[in-house]
Image 1 (cartoon, rainbow, N blue to C red):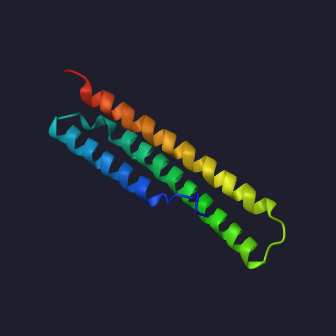
Image 2: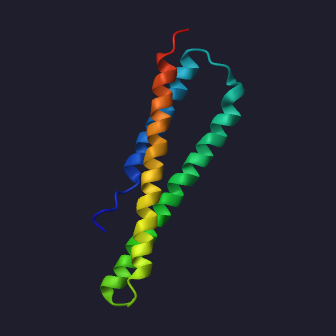
Image 3: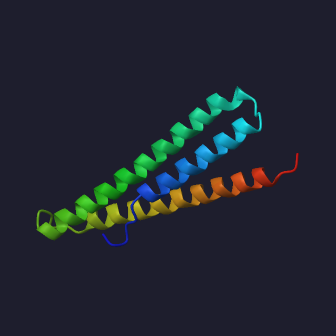
Length: 110
């Protein structure tokens, strides 16, 4: 359980970065044609964060069941932990790519 990092910190970072990008786009007069794409991207990102959070909660539940003696087989707990860890690492990689793309976009000269 100690190896699982809560998703709430990443969710906050992504939300603040997206809000900052929207504010800068509005202040620079960016056309509003991309609003539907922005909403679709936001919903996909939110869904991914919720899936990772669910995987982490399931891993915590599996380990809790194992520790409390409600489950004798440790393989489901190990599998849930591995799934949660891999999901979190993938989400972290996506977040890093989004941040890099945002930085590159902001560094473009007009």
